[in-house]
Length: 77
Image (cartoon, rainbow, N blue to C red; front, top):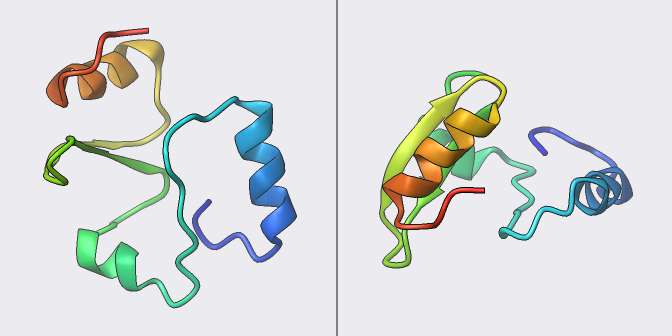
């Protein structure tokens, strides 16, 4: 959750959407700067070796999510 100030709100969002991937807090925006975040939302698909293989800007649709998953070798939903 980019710029979410209340941790419980982020936890509730993660639970509501059953997000199974790792999430992080970035209060000083260091990670956002390092990844070159230019807008919100942006999703980075990182493979098992820790390499960014795909970046999606904008709200995810199932088709766009599956494109990112495919880029990191994960079966589509």
